[in-house]
Length: 284
Image (cartoon, rainbow, N blue to C red):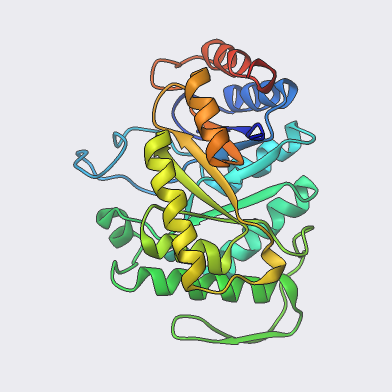
């Protein structure tokens, strides 16, 4: 018998939920309704004027992920706080390691660190990050950050990152900070298997999710999975409104979490809370 996926809520830091009052109201409603997590989206800058493949208009508000999650840590109690996703190659790894460790510290160990390698060239350029080798850069950044999270007088020597005998405190509350890789490529699947506790697919219907899961199974045959990561956790944001049939199909596929997004028509706190309540875990 298929298990019922946990539910998360996407977009807690942008668009109408960039307003701090709306952000807090929605997160508290999701927590009260039994959602297991809320998730940010991230774009540090957006092309102006908007041009493909940019997903949002340049006037869209995106509150910084760490700032949003730290704020939400103070107004919630148990709900997990996910980054969906941080574009890792365009962040300075020691600075990001400090920010994320601080969020985990302030939230009592509730952070889910979602990461990806990026795809939007104007944004990467604005962050002084080359598109080339962004996957290798992300892998090394994550490795270096984990050294800082787990060691004192830490040293690291890589192609992109170097430090000697430095300590960053506080450490994350989670001894093995929960990490999720986003992306639909073969490389993303291998990265999730080799380095992360979970994988996140965005805007996937049941058919594309099935293809993603097959890709992950193939990747598991190609790369070694460290034992400490445990069984891979699969999270999906559905491509369209979730109905009972689609929910059952995701469950049959073995999806662990569905991260719902309210959609463009939900532009007020009331409308988003109504969406949260209508799609609450007890309704499936």
